[in-house]
Image (cartoon, rainbow, N blue to C red; front, side, top):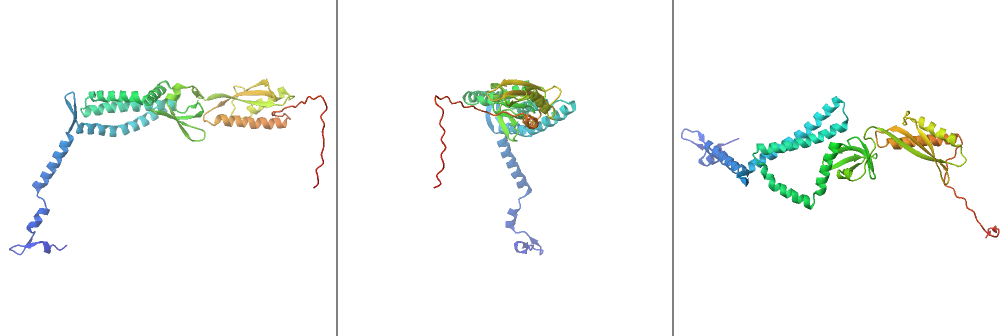
Length: 330
């Protein structure tokens, strides 16, 4: 690049920078003075007092340190509480539900510890929460009852474990597998592969059917009606045979077939048998398989599955007249 246009010639024929160009290159003292002014401004903002609590100032710097500790510590705590319990409980051979409950409680404890540690490092007195506690109490009184209720219900679920991750439960019209128990709600995965978010308080306020609370063995049943006049003992044998031939039915315990009732149009039989239930669809698939086999065996042995029938009786003084009319060809 040619700099001859902006350089002056000295007495010895050399070229020097013009006087105006010296303003473009600050000297070392000016540079450090600028840095010093910037640092003084940062220090002023850092030490700016927001308020005083108990004679101790609460500055921007203290709040910043506390926020940084939480921003860095919470993700680390989440990873640690997720990895260590999983590996530990896997080696000990304990169930996944216990590991999930311990993981959640450990994360809550880690967040509380990090909060106290952040306050201690930043020298923020705990009395700062006296005013915040009053504000929170007012908020709870006006509209946060459900949030607090669901949070406390979640802690109770994790501690008492009436339901746990992996259980197959039924709440009202909701049926599925528990995937996770959070601070506010529980996630349930249905057999149709969509998720249902249920507030934790719902599990303590209404009846919950836990199909796999203690183990995966579940007894299910079905009803079938046959026509009047069918050989009842033969029907019993065919139903038992259909259940024993199913791969999903357990034996032992042996299936039970009961002659349930004399229905309006059918002889009602009830069957009870045990299955291993690990997924939401296991019960429906087992019942469907047994019903298919019962229908096949009934057809092969001439047993008729009943359907609703009605006999109509006409009581009249005179015989009914029946008239046949020929259709007019036109």
